[in-house]
Length: 105
Length: 105
DNA sequence: ACAAACATTGTAAATTATTTACAATTGCAA
DNA sequence: TTGCAATTGTAAATAATTTACAATGTTTGT
Image 1 (cartoon, rainbow over the protein chains, first blue to last red):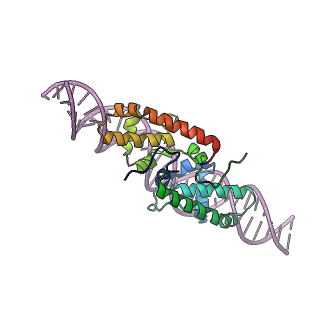
Image 2 (cartoon, each protein chain N blue to C red):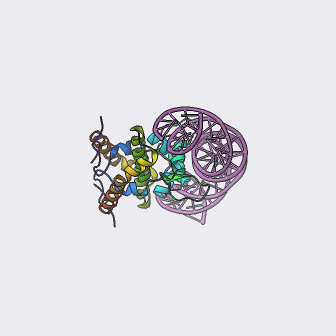
Image 3 (cartoon, rainbow over the protein chains, first blue to last red):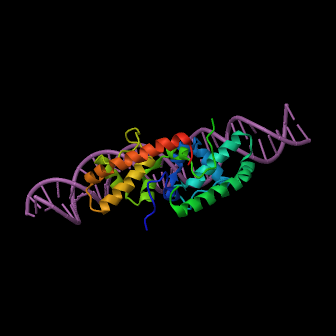
């Protein structure tokens, strides 16, 4: 069945969104090298792709990077930033799941 | 100044969003070859990049492709689909601009 | 000042993805 | 069947990413 359209924003889109590392860097102003480093330290985790293939990130990933970046600027360490963010990320996930079922907002 | 956060969705994000052709293909289920063809026919237009560099698309682009795809399935030609979509695209633009100023919805 | 841990950055070689251009193919309507 | 619109195939060149190893900054505690 078709979802209700034309309202301000479709979360359908966000659900399907995937972005490569170069574009994420462009969006967030975080160097690709740093993104890879964070991933190596397991602060973030790109979508599961086959070994050697290019990393892809979803909306949640990108949102998380932006939050981490903010906290780093405030003086947090990577680990403590990651810890502090957890509740926030859960909220984002929950919001996405919920709005997803409705289709729009 | 900082925008109001934590509400259901941030349009800030959409404004900055850029996506490569491979990911657009993955999101929309339109083959990359077809996306390039549509661009060649000037049905869509990727963001301005230097000659030879990889194409990037924004939210509006992607939305347009999805609309075109729907109309093609309904039997429209590319040109007539493109024509029919115009009002719709203007609405999307206007909505984005408006919500953009508010920051969230 | 010094060490130690944390964070970032540089880079080369191999690989993956995209571009561009030329061509072939398909489907449909006059 | 002829013509046009739309799509698809592909090879060579180029762009972008991955991976791994290493170097460099930065902060904190002693």
